Length: 294
Image 1 (cartoon, helix red, strand yellow):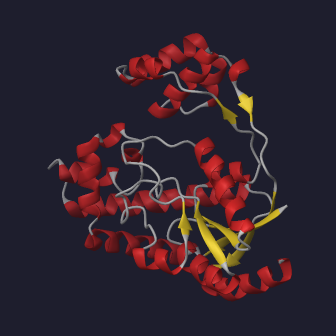
Image 2 (cartoon, rainbow, N blue to C red):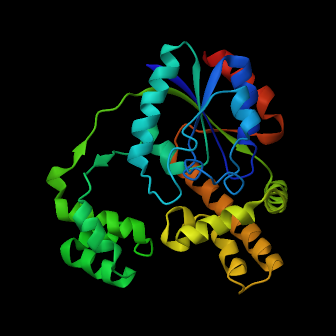
């Protein structure tokens, strides 16, 4: 059974910094578990590790697809399993780093993954429909499935229709490896975490997030999976001339704080065995934990 170290926590909790220092000490390689860092060209708004940081320690599952592409949790798990196996075979420690809770839950085998092939003709037909039309279609063909998903999320409604059309019998549950996982979360007092989030947003603006947001808007904006993410959609109104920049910045800070709260709730309830460590002393505490675990 392969050992993996999982470092998670809310946005702006310092996961990347901790992971790099731990990787240096324990001969590790980093596998990103961030649903936005998979997109090429979206660096600042996703707080992607810098080129310098990526040269220092090998990083995986960063810059995997174009910003116009969709990317599923099943695809993440399939790729992550392959990468973890390769890292382990080379005698190194796989370090899974990210705050996308449902990626981690699936990777750790805490939820079944079902794989259904896409029908390209159906996808084209669905792309032309409005969200209310899509919801109506889903309810007609599978009202049970409709009750299980977020009907305000266009991509999830489309995927549910595809699954319903293909029939659940065509889905296959894939056998996957099980891992000996040490799972830790970086914990900060709420006030300090919010200060870190607000500062990160300020830094993002000075580092060029508006250029990335403009690129996402030009490519399709809210219609894209990438365009629905916190970090870009808050600037669309400003870029369209509908809002002041200061208003957009405050909205992003607020949305990011709310997102952090949701992340914490999810991680606490959906990842049994997760151990929280103080963000300020995380590196020292984690080193001791790893030495006892390896």
